[in-house]
Image: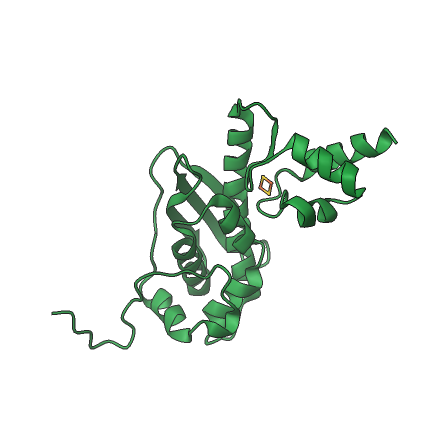
Amino acid sequence: MSHHNSPLARPESFDYTGVEPMQLTSGQAIEQFLNPQNVGDAAQPRFTGRATSFACGGALRISLHIDDSQHITEAKFKAAGCSVLVASASLLTSAIIGETTGEAAALGQRPEVLDHLAFSSAGGRAECATLVCEALLSAIATYSGTVRDEWNGDEVLICTCFGVSEQTIDREIREKQLLTIGEVTRECNAGAGCRSCYPLIEDIIEEVNSKW
Ligand code: FES
């Protein structure tokens, strides 16, 4: 018997990657207010990110468990703040389970998507979405740094989120005469996720261009 009386029956899964805000329903948001998902801590080893708002006093911690193929298998949060913050964290953690860290970080770069999908029915509160995305990006940046440090492939790994090596970035800069991180991201995706590789990309840009 799988009969649901409630109009708030939980959808099977959330996948907001590439979904435009207008396609999202307020029913999903209401569900998260009533029944937040993913509260707690991810299994060890976990990668943690925190964010605090000085404006509202809200604080959030997101922890991720990530498999060898860089997919997020568990995403959990603990929040001290308003119900909008909790719903927001619930939505985002649900959305990123099963995604790669690069895909999740790219989503985290767009708090306006989360803000719209969660709160079109609740008056909107952009700070909450921003806070949740900050915590997510910080957790992924921690992961990216660890993988980069432990990497022992033939080429030096610069962007963990999208698996881009120093050689690739170097070549793109040379061949296309790139001058900014934005241009590098456009050409080879490096930097399109958690952005923890920004200083490294900047160094390569400087180095290549100083040789000219
Ligand atoms: S390591 Fe995350 S964007 Fe490059």
